[in-house]
Picture 1 (cartoon, one colour):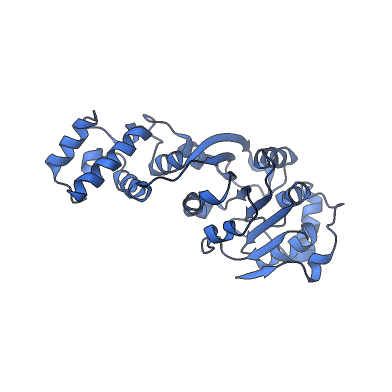
Picture 2: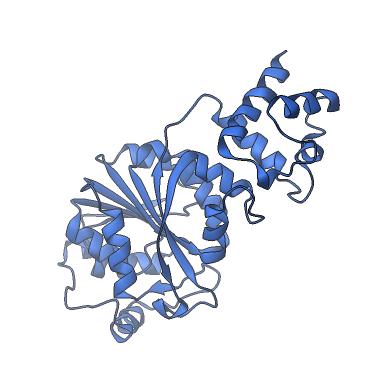
Length: 294
């Protein structure tokens, strides 16, 4: 993991005349640095000033002392963060994008690393609180990245995250909605989640084939049964169209004990995982832990 900061090209002043929400300016920047958006890294660079403004307005509520941006690319959002936040740290895997950031956001601390390998709790702990987390997440690693952010949520006060709209809608799904899955329960229990805005394909260069959505996530407190809750929810949604009972069979808890537990929580043996509310998931977690210890 390499760090670029405070030396060489980062001593130069930012190119404030460069408007990265202007496609021509962005293309010229990319050409200067030999940066071509790659499908492998899921690179679609945000160029909509409206969406950029909505993201920054949400992320910088309550005046954070520092910001962590994951996957900044050439720095479209990073420029705005640097103008409004005292300390900005970026994690970027593409070494060419890191070079471009030296021009567009020279005051940012840039860590060249894979976001799926970074120790986010340690990185966040080194930043001045309160911390705002911002990311335009590559589609192919959205799920794993969201999980890593959730596990590190004590280190930031809010997250403003761009993702594919279909994923965002699944995250926002409520009990009874067939779109509700393990990611819905997992994230809703760990964050207060709101929709910030949509980002159509034309908001990016090059335009993707799908519409994106920005979600705002404010961390909820940790709790003692959190690990058990995650394990239970993932098992319960392993085959989401099956009943909760059938998904939990094989967990080591006898069928009759599971039936008794579901009945005690007011749940039918035929209930499916997408029909259950957050409070019931907490109660079910407590039940399975108690049974496992008895």
